[in-house]
Image 1 (tube, one colour):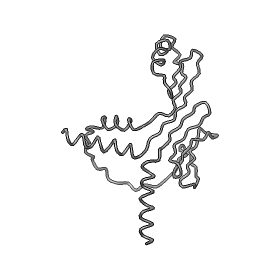
Image 2 (cartoon, rainbow, N blue to C red):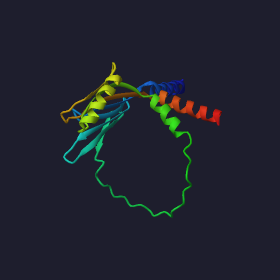
Image 3 (cartoon, rainbow, N blue to C red):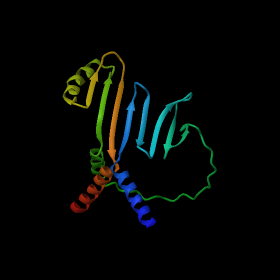
Image 4 (cartoon, helix red, strand yellow):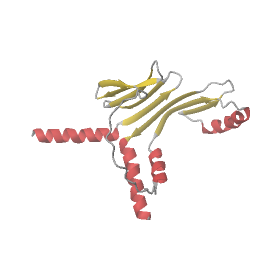
Length: 172
């Protein structure tokens, strides 16, 4: 009986992993950058006396590390083996399908390219793209800001990869 409960809890956990969104959030005005899978994983970039450090929570257990700190490890020297070149067939289609799985919840960009003619060309292009959750602006004052909130479920990402692999085997 306990095995049925453990196995069912494991399958519920797997389903939860597939359908809970991974959140990628960036706000340059507040220096807030994070990637999170709610309840399981969260990684944020925190300003530090150097450049920055990364604070990570895995199952509510926090730890942080500095990606610029050199860690010395002794490595055994291995003989070099010549690697075969891999062909990347269909990777562009797979990447296009994977990008289709991402959902933009909020995109606000305010940019200045320091080129008046390019800024003037971008104003009508950005006006055409603007919508309910996408707000793109051009300024002539020299400041930039970006607020981006992307969501993707691992199930949608997995489905797009499987669909691409299936279509590539059918058509080739």
